[in-house]
Amino acid sequence: MKKCRRFWICRKTDGLTLIEVLAATVILSTMLAGLILALGRSERQWVRARRVDHAVLVADRLLTDWRRNGPIPASGQGVISGETQLEWRITPVENAEANRLGMQAIRLDIIGKLSDENEVLASVEIVLPDLSPEP
Image 1 (cartoon, rainbow, N blue to C red):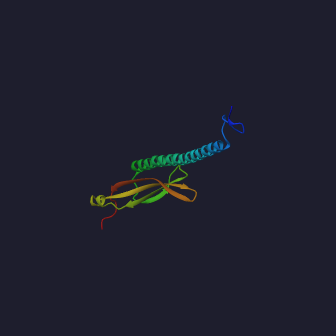
Image 2 (tube, one colour):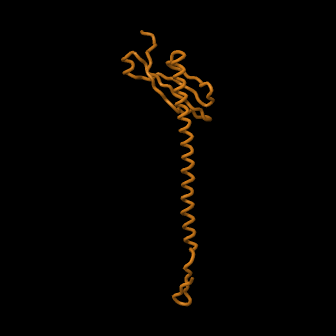
Image 3 (cartoon, rainbow, N blue to C red):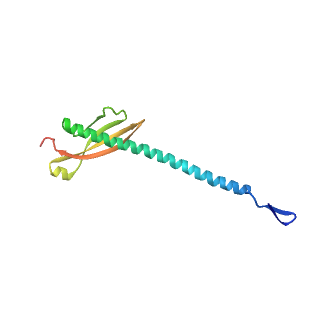
């Protein structure tokens, strides 16, 4: 339907102008790009959370096996059987309270190997009897 104020100036009232269509397209494409970026970030966080959760389970399994089958090593590193992308590392940790009680603190790290990077996925500190020889 047309509205005319004067016979030479008529304006169509149905539909949208080209500027309105372009503005709507820009707004929608910006929202869509933001959504795609957020979904990608969410997927990466989900994958990392699953890897960390798995590393915690592996650390628990390692500590349980060491407890059942012999002493927990005071230091060292190695590969985890059945896990192609995980390694373990134990390092001594300075802990004055544990030392005062005749104990030693150690940290078990579960390390994920991705291409050239090594990332600590899980870390557990535990206190053991001090097995080092007395001076």
